Image 1 (spheres, rainbow, N blue to C red):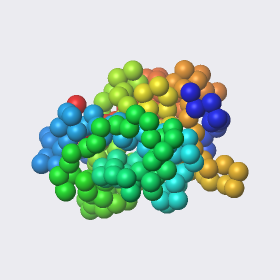
Image 2: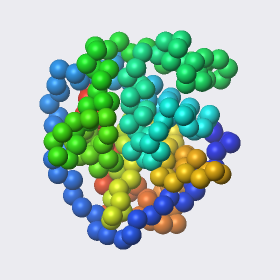
Image 3: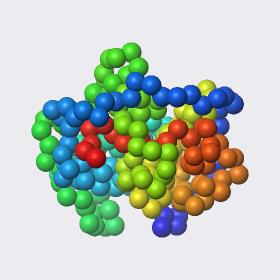
Image 4: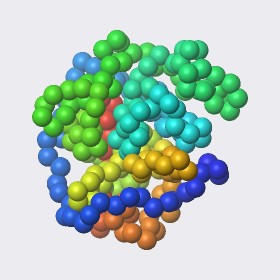
Length: 224
């Protein structure tokens, strides 16, 4: 699985700090744009596929903001689009390995397709940009601190003091961006859960005894 990728490389760490409690989490009450069960399943499949293609092919030039939250925002926005021949070509998914076993197409209303442009931010405004904290605090539901309850496309959220970080549960492994890009390193990482559980820096271990691991979160626009 993703043999070409360097697994489990170190994350950039923020300075020490105490984990805080989230407040103002998105309501469980669905709105008119919430995805139903079939739409949610198709969204999850496209979301993880798009993240996986960034790992496999390298970051597309169409993904501008290269950090953990930027990866989430980009993949959400692309998952909500119409995946026609033009889109597949632009994303390098028209032929070869990437064209195999594509997820079912999403049937969405025009307003549902703009969900990725309407993130709720800390000040109550909405827009295309939202920080890692805002993505979970105003746009997601808390699921649990038990990663075994995560579904593909759910987010693992960490507080490392001055910085917050997101990882994406892909179904068999976790994907994330370190927030740092160099000529030799695009910042993308994939790591198995078993490896992460044994991480030397325990602040990144997703388990209940780690105060820096806040828990698993699910986009509020998805049905349970």
